[in-house]
Image (cartoon, rainbow, N blue to C red; front, side, top):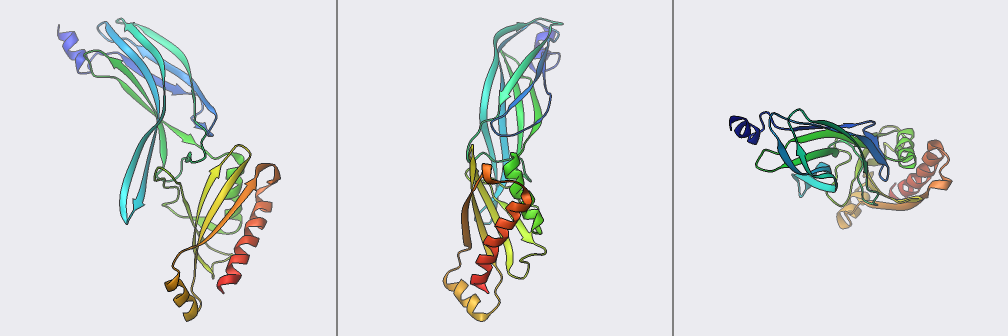
Length: 253
């Protein structure tokens, strides 16, 4: 009786442990690992064991900091299992990371982790958390490298996700430092291309520029598409971006 009471509050209860072989993955790829199930001091009935991909981010909305928590996807790996005292089992598992155009990557305050839950009747459910990194594919990374080639420095709050859009914030340090305050970069990544939007904050060089900005305070917006088959390396991508920025800077100087 005492053992059952203690197990109901988590003492001496069954335990679960998820181990991921390589906790770094691109959207659309699959994580592989194992779940270890260990029995406690009494027999317990497990309704189901479920792995969920959870997303957490912090972002600003109307000058207020807000927190986003979202269940991206879930998979049930076992149902209606009886775990006896001393029981131990290791199950191979795989978990596919969804591919979507607005799927954010791990960056700054945007984080992912896998949560493994064992739902046990009349007891505290054991939970296991494992951080994972959702990283950009090589073409998306090529875009980041190209911005670095041009001397853009990524800011600390870069990568915030509001549930719809993830933006990356950069300030220039060499090229364009006299003309641009900041750029905000977002991307919709598809299977063979990505649609890029860059919001460019300009520096005023004259009273006319300042008055014009008061009339039309919106940021300059550049939209373009990068085809993966045409992206040879980050330097060529940087050259392409430089021409786009030079074209916009000529409009504001």
